[in-house]
Amino acid sequence: MESLTLLLQIFVGAAIINNFVLHYFVGICPFLGVSRRVDMAFGMGCAVTFVISIAALLSWTFTFYLLRPDAPLPTWLWQRLGGDPSVRIDLSVLSYIMYIFVIASSVQFVEMYVRKFAPKLHKSFGVFLPLITTNCAILFACLIILRNLQDPAQLWGPAEALTLALGGGVGFTLAICLMAGIREELELCDVPRPLRGAGITLIIAGILAMAVMGFAGVDQNLQDAIDAFLN
Amino acid sequence: MANGPTASERFLNGILPENPVYRQLLGMCPVLAVTAAMLPALTMAAATAFVLISANGIISLIRGQLRPHLRILVFTLTIATFVTIADRFLAAYLYEMSKVLGPYVPLIIVNCLIISRCEICASKQSVRVAVADAVGMSLGFTLALTSIATVREILGSGSWLGIRVLPEAWPNWGIMVLPPGAFLVLGLLLAAVEWWGQWRAQRMDYAVAPAMRGQQAQATGEGMEEANSWKA
Image 1 (cartoon, rainbow over the protein chains, first blue to last red):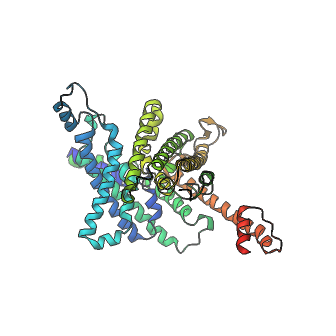
Image 2 (image 1 turned 120 degrees about the horizontal axis):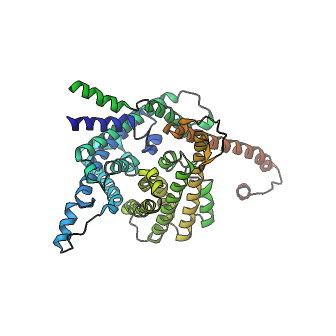
Image 3 (image 1 turned 45 degrees about the vertical axis):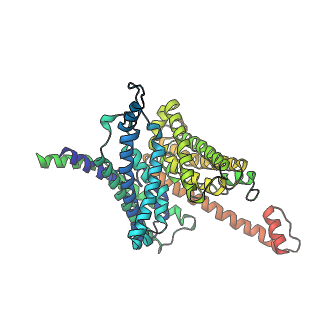
């Protein structure tokens, strides 16, 4: 039960309270670029959620078994090759290169898979899929999940990693769909000329960010409520 | 490889005419995330400049070996290498600042500005042009970051680079150092730049149009000369 509460906290934290777009400013490029129509925004959000989950799980696996300090595989290899057993193997300096490699290749594989087995979906995603590689939200999720790399006691497990990835993806979808809905209405408004395009979008994003700030502390309340319910 | 803009053109274009933030809307994550105060903004600008210049130089050196379908992967891996160097350097020598910047230093890897410069300039032109382009773009990016950070720090904490500039009685606008402030300031600054551009274009129209219509058009600038020769 303890762990379920933690997972719920991580999910709500990533999706609403510390929304990836409106609190951490990651994934701003698609947020400004692909938020003209709600259906396109929703497609983009689903694609990002999907890729973010795969990339987070893969990079967690690789980091846990290959790159973290005292990771099992390189240690075994080192001792097999006759290295000094007291030496501590730490490849974590390679982690950024590994994350971006994992993200780029998982985007490539997802694109191939979707093109082969769901051509209709592929058509509706269009150009967004390859563009996801340079979406900061995915790299950011990997970085957050593995930020305690040097401290094994605090390192998250795969369940926490997947929950944060899903929460981040849902938060991204929520933000981009809200923005697309507002921008569809905005088409009919008389916006001052210099503000048209990115200017008014950023100001609306600022107002949305103020609204999201109102959720601060909800996770603590949620935990208290669950505790009260259990006891 | 002599075609394309020259080094000085690339350099000047990056600063104002093609400013990465105000004109091209590239690299928005750090622009919004680290501009609550001047010091982190300057550190971020320096780190981005280091990565941009090194990556542009290296990509330009190996541009003959690039394969079209693998080029983006090569770009990202090169950038990731330099970002790792910058990140380790910050953690070693500016530990407090690297704590403040947090995940935004590794996020330089996916800064669209750097990939777009590698794609547009470095993979096609010589090292000299590529480095000049990177320096110009870095200056333009620094200008954008510092302009936003100036507004946010002065209004939000009443200081600039940590030095108090507004009177003590100034009520700090808390919203400016919080996430919504970043969106609002960037939106309004973008509108201001846009407004200035439109005003200048309008004034140019008034100033240029009669001269163009006149019999003895005076060629004052390169653009005018070009326009006149085209008319003739």
